[in-house]
Amino acid sequence: MKINKQIIIASLLSATFLLSFAQNSNPAIEEDYQSKVLRQEGARIIPTGVPLLLIAPDSRAGSMGDIGAATTPDANSNHWNAAKLAFADKKTAVSFTYSPWLRDIVGDIDLAYLSGYYKLNEMSALGASLTYFSLGNIQFEDEQGQALGTYNPNEFAFDISYSMKLSNNLSASVTGRYIRSDLTQGQNIGTTTTHAANAVAADLGLYYQKDIAATNPQQVAFGLQISNLGNKISYSDDDMVSSFLPANLRLGGRYTYSMDQFNKFSFMLDINKLLVPTPVRDSLGNVVYGKENNVGVLQGAFQSFYDAPDGFSEELKECNLSLGAEYWYNNILAVRAGYFYENKKKGDRQYLTMGLGLKYNSLGIDISYLVPTASHNNNPLKNTLRVSLSFDF
Image (cartoon, rainbow, N blue to C red; front, side, top):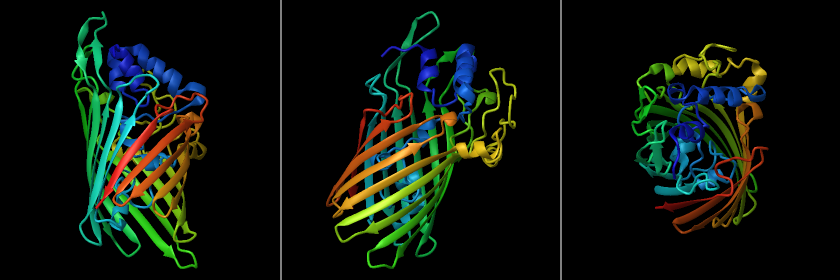
C-alpha cells in the first residue's frame, strides 16, 4: 500500500483534527479541511485527537447502536462504564474483538480489543483493556516522491479500572488510561520533526440497578460515565498545535423484562456529549465565532456546555443518541439491533446496527453488522462483520 504523507494526514485522520500536521506539512490541507468540513453548510464539527478512544470496540455494543452505559455487565464494560463490573455475576471474564477497518478500500487496517475483569469480592472488581489500531504498512515519501521507508503507523490505549459497590444498588468506578499515537514514525513534515503523541487520561463512572417486584422479573438500570479526561495531545514539540482528547459524557438507561424463564427483552438508550469546546478558529488561527477554545482541559469541559455559537439549540445538536434492543432465549441465543444518530452539522454519523450472540457454557460469540443511513454512506465499518469471543470463568 503506497500513500503520500499528505494523503495520510488528510484522509486517515479526517475524523480528527491533527492541526499539528496540517499547519506544518501543507497549508492547503488545513484550509480544505477547515472550509469543507468545519464550515460546510454551517457545520461545526468538534475536532479532537485520537478518535480511537470513542470507537465502539466490541461486537455486542456495536450491534446495538454503540450503547453501553447501563447494559448488563460483561467483559467489555471497561470501555463503556467500568462501574458495572462490581455487579458482574461471574468471577472472571475476558473478551477479544477483531474489527476490519475500511475494508471497501484497503485490506490491512485493523482494530483489535482485549478486555476483561476479575471480581475481588462481592463488592469490588478490577478491570483492564487494551485497544490497538493498526494502519497497515505505509510507504512514506517526500514531496519529490522519493521513498523514505515503509512503516506501520499505529495507536493504542491501555487502561486499568477499579469498581466498588456503594450500596446494594449503586456502584462507582475510576479508570486510568495511557494513550500512545504513532502515526508518522518520526518523519519530518516541512520544517517540523514529528514524534509519537502520548497522553494519560481518567474515567469516572456510576451505575445503578434495581430489580422491580412483579409477577414477571424486571430490572431498571442507569449509568453515567465521564471518560478521557486527560492532557492535550501533540505530534510535535509545538504546544500551540496540540489537540484535546475526546473527553465524553455518557448517560444511559436500561429496562429489562423477563417474559418467562426462557425469554428476556432489554431496551436501552444512551446520550453522549463531547466535553470539548466548539471550534472557533479559521485557517489563520483567528477567532471567528463563539468563545476562545484555546483553554485548559477542565475549563474546556465546562465550557463545552455553553459555548456553542447558536446557544442551547446547538448544544442539543452536539448530543448523540444511541437506541438498542436485545433479546435472549434461554441465555443461549441473543438477537440485537440498534440505531446511532449524530446531527448532520456535527458529523452526520447515522447508522443501523444488528447482530447475534451465542453462549455455550463459558464460551460466548458475538457478531455485529453496520448499515449506514446517512446520505454520504461512508462509514468505515460498512459491509463489515465484527466478531467478539468471550470466556467466563
